[in-house]
Length: 346
Length: 87
Image (cartoon, rainbow over all chains, first blue to last red; front, top):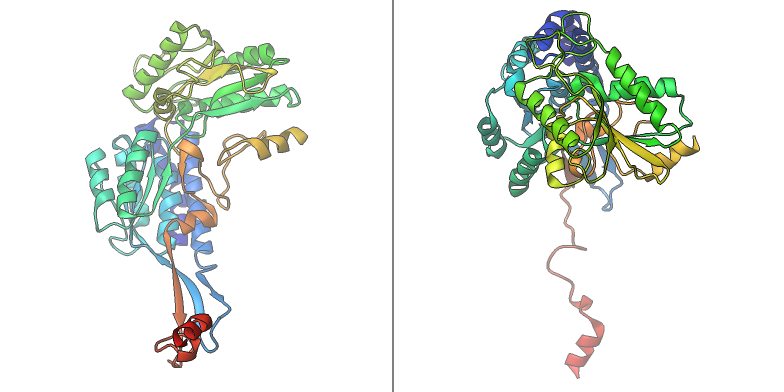
């Protein structure tokens, strides 16, 4: 049955990719990719879940059977962010369903319509096995704390992840927390600079940096710092920004709040002495939509909000962030900060 | 490759990419360390997140386990203590 769901997803990819781009904003190409990854994850779990369901140990008492079996937990609650609403859903729901659980999904408010529409593709499964409950934080809290749910998979910010983990800890309810990061990229002179620059731009600006694993900090060996910064800025300026359904590299950020957060980080970093090498503004040719230019900040120092490890920065990391480069952990390297972005989970 | 493996060994993270940023593989565990979270998606680890492992022991013959259950055999008290009590 899961293989049939995966096959249907592949067949209907373009339609659901359009919904995803219209609601979340990412370029259509990225939406298509995301939906392809949904199908592969479902196929993968459809196979491996039957591969092993436990093991038999050698008995310590003659005549007895001693073994361990893998069984479902019950009803799994999956709380999702807006950045990859479908692939994260599938990674977790495919594993939970293949393991024999029922699933309740609480999508982010920004991507609820896409998620509800996507559920059409699961029609072949028994009624009620996978369900969606839309709403805000209170809905999520109720589902997580309910005695009738048995495991939680949460993807989102650090503070909310901590609250989810605390609720689950009191109930000894298993939970999986994916809470973003403030991911560094270390750049050494041994790497070919042409490849590095393209790789860095992609890692920083994919989905406007609204990726839990996007690169926000760049620690660059001093021998190549200036050249790298200059070429990265050139690369950033080459990216085409616009409606995700057009031929573009970057769409808008997902929400007004995300863009305001991004602009706040940039302006505070500049106030604190960071240098804006490129970007940081709203593109002039786009009057509607939450667009921002891909940004590179240099002269970023470790104590700045944009890089530091204080709790506020942790919040920033998951909530919205810029790529930056700065003085690095390597004695011979300098860093700069790169940006565009607002981060969230996975 | 020396630099790459130094990074692999010394960086404390759930994911490490060398020249291959942001790739995933359905067969390998995806997730973070420290404040990036706990648990894994994808791979066999991603499946285990949603499984209970139940430990089972069955004696199909329902044999008496005299070596293990009550009453304990009298002779198995602590020898030195039995001797002291007798004196």
